Length: 157
Ligand code: FES
Image 1 (cartoon, rainbow, N blue to C red):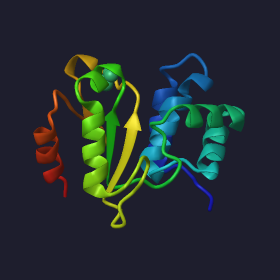
Image 2: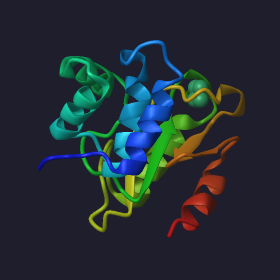
Image 3: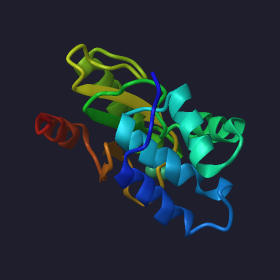
């Protein structure tokens, strides 16, 4: 299935491109815009990005596969990322990860059957001072306890 950017997203890419000295440097922004439109990054999406930026597809592939924030398959409506890196681990990150896996009955990069929830164990998300933390889509939740996590998950609709 082919992929084409919407007019609006082509404009976003053009704006983003102005911030960088080279087209290659804009690849991460462009991948993010693509994921925003398509939900995840496919071969066709990478081909379109390479074509729009005028760079080799292998460079798009390298960035898309290196960074975990780019999904390679459809994720849930609420994508929950749980940090288990050092600061979060020392303050209960693994307990929260276990709690969330058990609650939804799925493992890393799994999606619930209704497509509502997906979960992912991630490395440091830059909020170490507020560990432990999780992110749900683009929102961060910090200084967590198991009780707070349960409360937050209860608000997801
Ligand atoms: S270690 Fe979890 S945010 Fe840095």
